[in-house]
Length: 371
Image 1 (spheres, rainbow, N blue to C red):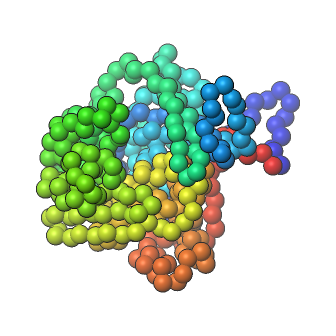
Image 2: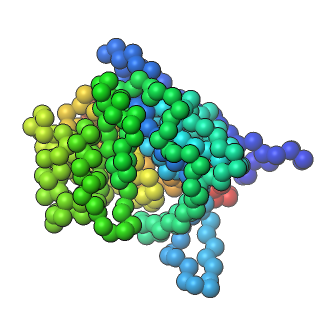
Image 3: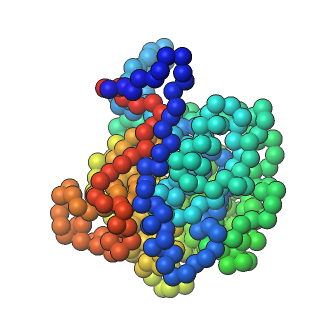
């Protein structure tokens, strides 16, 4: 049933923390005595994601499709910020927020519900919040985005960067000065990128990898930039440029090479039915960051990242579909997969806090299917 609101009063969205176990999970991760203020710091743009689901396809010109599934959630850089925070990582985000209704919702959701530190974020007067409409169908999606230029540079923090064990950057644009400063102080630099709409795949992107410790492209991006014919060949080419490279292959899993440790790993995806792939690559990256900071071997880092991404695609709601430890615990107790498959994830058990239990509690999107 739809919850009723008192006459003449605006509804208040619930901002209760859906991941009660995130704090104890973080404490368990940092049991070795890491006393820095943050685990991960990142900057970028936050989008208002509107996600239509249950579509038979895209509407032809001049027609309309009515569907019963719609979710909304923080998107853009918020995808990975939320996913990392839900695993217990202390996340700091520097981002501009519009002073409109969407900007207020995104700020409150990230700060109050998801526990992301917005101390270096700012509200921009008169600037409209970017919006992306995602239409999910047949386990795929199409998107339309509105975005207006940010009045001031995204990478201008207006203050020194914080102390953190790691930072996350986009390498499809010049790396921000704060990333080099953080790396010089000992932070690991994780890099990702987006699809090159121009199709040029410029070589200077690969040159930026000299300032990155871990690179996480998907297979299509990796092959395009390296001009290779397979994900494995792309991984080998990238391993000559960056200490750790991970090539994400979606439903086929991932390949990784750690050149410094001399490790190579190839792990299959979690065998689940994908309902909505929105943000799955970011959830994968969040899992890999957690596994790296936890000191897991390369194959286990890949397996944990695949686990997180696989659990996220079973739900429709973008960043708010990223898993909490309760869902990870519940999945381990379920009979969804053969015991032999679940046994491959036994290394995760020591990280599951007692508070996680074996129940699944999920954040509600602002709009959803009515009952």
